Amino acid sequence: MSGEQQLSGPDLTQGVSLSEIGETGAGGAGGESGDAGKPGAAPGGCLLGHAGGEPVLLVRTGDEVFAVAAHCTHYGGPLAEGLLVGDTVRCPWHHACFSLRSGEPLRAPALNPLARYRVERQGDRVAVREKLPPPTPTPPPVAAGRAAAAAGPESVVIVGAGAAANAAAQRLRREGYAGPITMIGADDSPPYDRPNLSKDYLAGNAPEEWIPLHPRELYDERRIELRLGTRVTAIDPQRRTVTLDGGATLAWGALLLATGAEPVHLDLPGAELPHVHYLRTLADSRAIVARVDELRAAAAAPAGAPRAVVIGGSFIGLEVAASLRARQLEVTVVERGEVPLARALGRELGAFVRGLHEEHGVAFRLGQRAAAVEPEAVILASGERLPAGLVVIGVGVRPSVALAEAAGLAVDDGVLVDEYLQTSAPGIYAAGDIARWPDPHTGERLRVEHWVVAERQGQTAAANILGRRERFDAAPFFWSQHYDVQISYVGHAPRGAEARVAGSLAGRDAAVTFTAGGRVRAVATVFRDRLSLEAELALERGDQPALAALAEGAATP
Image (tube, rainbow, N blue to C red; front, side):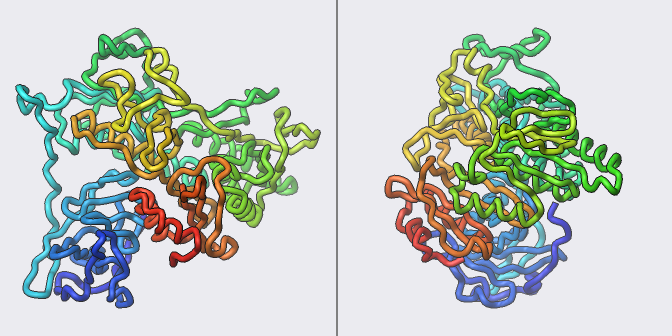
């Protein structure tokens, strides 16, 4: 999805000196290299160059030098502008993390490994040689008295086919699990890039072939059985079975619940009319695009552009508004709050987002609510009539916990899990929008509806299904795209947290820190990608002095 990649920096096959690469800081995180100003040099002991016609990143950490592909396998983010942490590199765009040793994607949203290259060293010079083969999967630990072939549970069943489910299945295979994996999803489509449904895909900038997370054939190659268009109707924790619609049962050795969330539906007169849409699935996004095409085909020139009303100034609602503007619709957003996104981002950042949309022609009705939908309009409680040939409702989602609750699992605003993402029933794990986990950074139980969190939890759950005993301790991260501006947010701030702006939102160069109880709980950034990565690392390490420096505006962009 990144398009053609331009080559820059030296030809690494000809060799460079170690001094040209620099070295990582003593703390393990990449700092500014003394050679950062040289062509191709990057912060943190990196040197961007090329080999064999492909962009390559050389990284020096201590006495070791690694060579990997220079662009993230998620959306092609420039890893030379990222952050080095130990023997890993983090992408500045969406915070994927890769091992420099193996190329493996250690953290979502990247799901595919980086290419690695052999490094040849002679004295103080190093040169990049041929690509290395992908690493061999590491088999899970074998319990006492069990054969190696039987390592891990007899089978794994995953209920859901979204972000967490797919990430879990892929990691199970990367970790060497050889048993049966079955993924059961109510959606008819294989796992796809859900964030894009409200962004580039809906805007018409991303073709549908970009939307699947993997080719369908890959699931066959990795022996991951997809049962799509299928619902699980019951779970039996004692018998270790799930019941499918139609009555068939399926046994499991370990079960992962990744049922996600469902849109909140408004009880409005006319809300069931055919031009009223919600956006959660690929089918939903296709239906909105089809309606837009109908409206544009039917619109006569004197009538002007077709009109749409988006009910709800949520992230989804505003991203939909931006995408509909890209398709030349007149858009009005109806939001009950006085400032869109104020609960999540604070009033300052919420007002900035509103301004972005108004610059692009979006109209707002703030402090208003919809009272009814008519075939060609939305009626507000104030009595105002907003013409609309398309209505999209985005007022939030609810976790899909009915299956877990019926099975007797502990549920409280989500499925309760421990630090290993195991539920109250042995052998059953939960990940994604439904999981409410004990967050070590805040001391609170959190449940967040972020794509990256869901994928990372799926990866962690898979490791623990295989006995790895990995704690889920990642700082939550999400991004939201509004036209050409991306907002990155790391951490989790409670409602009412104090927001403090460093830099200039108007100048689109800012960091916003959110403080509660005397501690920085979250950081949002606009065009300060490196700073966002540094905030993520500081949150993970509990480094409040570093976070406080951000709050004071002392950190540099």
